[in-house]
Length: 129
Length: 356
Image 1 (tube, rainbow over the protein chains, first blue to last red):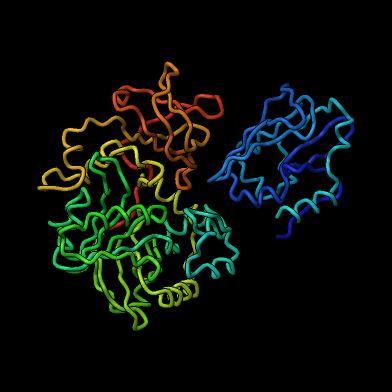
Image 2 (cartoon, rainbow over the protein chains, first blue to last red):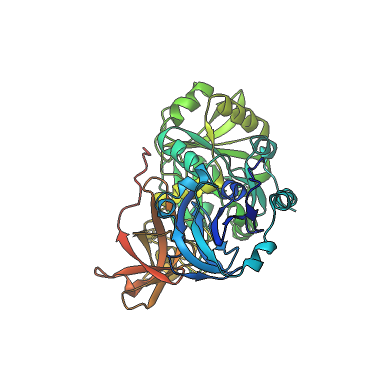
């Protein structure tokens, strides 16, 4: 299975991607994840103002047949959510890296170093596939 | 060690996602669950369901034997009919649900769930007793395809030109490519369709023919959505070893007018503990095991099957609810991740299939 893994993003083993811009992290699920899930029919993410903690669940995406928890790549406060994706979750299948889920104001910049590089994530996908 | 159907390699070559289902490596989806569901609702799709079990009862008492074992009426059904029925213990609990095909006065085919083949065969065999019947498990000799959807008959006729006009829930023993097949106008999708039992090579050739003809290969995930949209029960979900048919809205399959059958006494006058309720949710997707609550937040039942309906684009569920809580004005809520979502009970199936 060929999967897109943009070089400019960071990743988690739970198949989330993170775009770091200053102290803002934009978070979504990877192309690998959307492909494994199949038709995504439901997405639920926290409202603006919610605090999320690295490693804890912050929402779900559901395909027709399965429920997958979303795990926070970083700790921080939600400063934006993509209502468009909650309304039309199939947009995640259409473009996993355009269909971001939430933006977070990063609380502990030290956590960023724990994220995977594109190369490391690619390696991880190949060994876990 | 999981088992594989005779078509396993074809599924792998089609890049199907394979999962372990009841000890079988089965295709769960090929391309997209949604596309596979829509292919069956609008055109034609094919499922490899060779994992299911085939038993034969043959001999002078074949009909009397099977009629004694199951709750529905096999004796009075016309020859050439297919009859859906639960198989119960003396205490009325459900061992399995199955379809009996009346092939000939001394020859019946019984198709059972893959997960229950051993349990069913052991139980049924132990009741042969004084019946003059040869009862055999021929599951390993048969492959089985379910061709389903409004274009099924036209598609099938290109492979079997001598196909007779068959009613819904009827069966015919014929030939395909010069080899014997058993064709039944049955299925698990609510659409018109046929199930085709045959030898492994015949079924493999037919599968290849269907692929060339543009029939959509469909996996178990779409099969589950299709059956749930039309509210067909699934063993292990709506039915299990602890409930009776009357706890699962299958009263219509229990024929108390029959002189005798296993479970008759227990089911006679049985007061159901549960009712099966069809629920449509406003938002969110109900899943198996989620709690069903009343307006006071009291748990009154459990979701036995839930999914996003592809046709309705809405969450749908079958729920096992305490019988005395199922009243005209009852309000239902489903607990999805600690939040309560209102659910509307419906009397009709979520989707009306187009079967004959």
